[in-house]
Image (tube, each protein chain N blue to C red):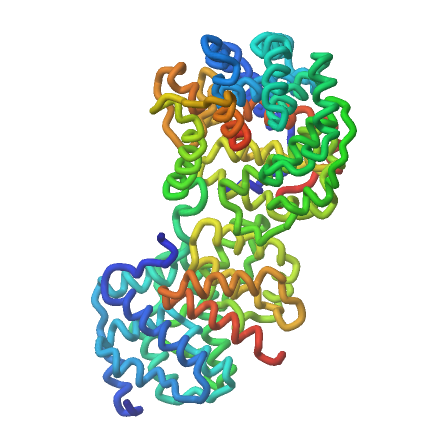
Length: 318
Length: 238
Length: 81
């Protein structure tokens, strides 16, 4: 409760966000074998959740590198994780093989784009991506609306021209409809966060989010953050914290950072807030690596935006 | 789903729900048939009935205030009896401010109906000291939920001016209550949002009220709040 | 009831329990805890959602017969990401 009591990131709050992010990255580093792909099966039998986890690890590590606000140890761990993830994907070969086998799938391109943004390129996959994203088929994928934006964002990161009508895609998302704000549920909430992530490229282009959606989030993000902080739904709450950092006038919610810091375990793992983690960290990995990845991203972006945005242009939470 | 407020165990909670239901019907029906006295006579348990009158405070006057009907003398006398039988506590400083605001709303509503309650036994003696509204939106909403029976139509001009600067905070409180599935609090905040509904109606108020009328239909107290809100909104400006 | 009956109400003596109830109901605030998304009750729905996603990977309980190859991964990734 009381998420709106302070709304600017003072030095204490910045240090707290940095601490949460650093510890999360350290935990990810110590648990990286959990992200190893199953290699005793044919490519197409590698589980979707394994691909997703490794992609998210690469995302977090790539953002630590992109923002360059981490201390040397954290930066080194993140770099190691990015290299590890690239190796797990056979330096792009695995992603290429998956994409070539199922050309209509988008996840190999989406994953690859995270590496491409960090300068890890795969020439043949670049060509395949350019070809596939230029087809009529790429504009009629039966994805949920925010996922279409993920593909657009991936194309942009790789450097492939985008032919989609992005405004029309935005209009199909939950956020794009600016719905009655009490109609948010957990499922649509993840849709909202990802719509923002993709349109702003994880905060690097806040202007990518249309003004009317910036205004809408300034109205209601404080309420959603308050509600999910009270119920201690850390996984989603951390995604909301990222959303706040992606706005042109960022919202930081420093008192929420205090609660997140309290919830983080001593080893750096952040529990998801829905299920109680087992004591053994290897067993806890399955259901709690995602909130910890999100914590690494949220901490990194909060520190970076707080350091670069003049206090006067940061939005208040109340 | 816990979308309704559970009555406190005992006799008073059920009596409050019965009285809230009677007031809602009185507000929805045409005509001037509602009598507090008849309700109390029919309800049987005198002390629980008077307790319900005390709990609902100024809200028992809404059928008269919102429909422009005169308050019968015996109904005024029964409200005076309820105040005397259940006097404001003298020894609970934490709750004093709450009682004072409630009593002030009751006295003001009675005065509007031509009844001078200033000397009634059992009322909190001191006029409410003006407290500035909480600056943050969550505490503001929490406070306003507890002060619902001073909400429109019983809000004075000073409070309306203060609320006019807090429209967004009030709406955030409403949204939060709906998300917490706290229908009674949401209905109370929706009612507060009608403070200037004649001139500036928040666009989210209508769908929120409709939502609450459906999901709160099993809770007489939720329906009383939404019904008061609706009548306040459609009342011609004073 | 008429005005003559009002004195019967004026001399009501409430029980201690009734006084406590009046005080409690009169000072009642918002619900002490949320029942919305992320709460204990809300969590059950989210877990259901996660379970639905996990069921896209049927290998946990039963062998995959994916003659085309990659269909299971394709469907899982389309839903998961």
